[in-house]
View 1 (spheres, rainbow, N blue to C red):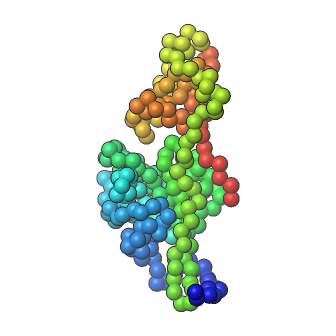
View 2 (cartoon, rainbow, N blue to C red):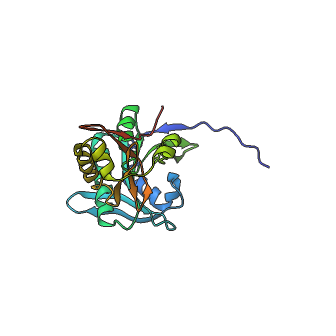
View 3 (cartoon, helix red, strand yellow):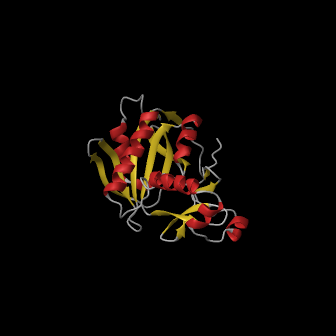
Length: 241
């Protein structure tokens, strides 16, 4: 067996390099989408035209689950416009093709803690992946290394004690217990949530109002009604750098 030898590498910036640009990086990903570390994906389309909103850098898909990944690439440091554009294109695609699951993917050479915290706020309500890409020079060659620094939130159930005690009730239970106002506020919150996921409904439990899709709990946010208001508890990924 050949003994491995240590080889020193040098990190290079594609943004500041005369030979490599975003189109070059896009072509490398298109040749082998698996280098992103998101699974055995295949290329659906590059520079996908979005109605009145520019072009999506790449659309990838999982051939087994048919899940689609809306990918935006940015050389250098990620910025606000990149985040907004990524979410906008993801939103357009999921509305055009609601029969598929969709995931927004941001790729940049640098994603600092501040922007990662901003991106994390969307996670849980928007399926979002952030990937940092490093270009390395090794013995006159260039290699690409992709690191997933923010993954889709895998939502867990409500606390076990609460789940055991959270017997199902109906809307009338909450209106009788307090007033009709908290339930009405929950309706307004649901209307906003349905702009992202239309299949969700309110699920009334003894100690909280949750969410469900086709009767299956999906509690990325729960509501705790008070007499004249409600408290929303949103699950956000805990990221530490």
